[in-house]
Amino acid sequence: MRRFLAFSEAALSEAGITSQQYQALLVIKVASQNQIRVRELSEQLLIQHNGAVQLVDRLEAAGLAERIPSITDKRSVLVGLTVHGVSVLDALARKHLGAMLENEPLLVESLTRLRDLAHTAYCGD
Image 1 (tube, rainbow, N blue to C red):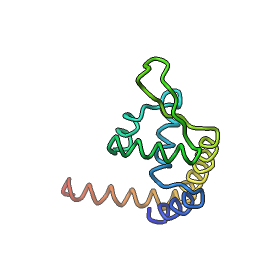
Image 2: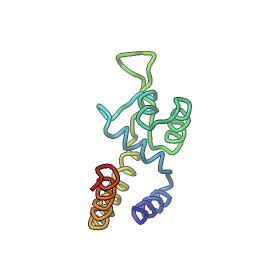
Image 3: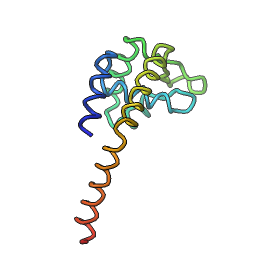
Image 4: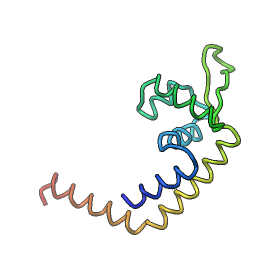
């Protein structure tokens, strides 16, 4: 797991984004119509609303996301990915998937050990 996390940190650093920004891009990408309200983004990322506003500000400044006025609720603003944001996210997601598949045997072994430990600790076997 540590090996994968180290890979992820390096890949994100190379792309010039933080882990939290990458997570936000993923949340936006899988949201309905690839758009999400800031309040919902904060809930998904388990951060305060003002932290999500600042995160969106940074994503917007980097050209990765944009604020879009809601058609259905004039008081709401949605966040969507820019073309650049989609491109960066797709490249990073491919790299992450490749690394996960490359490390699949180690990840499976780690999860198996964790399951065995949990079973022993909580089931008494």
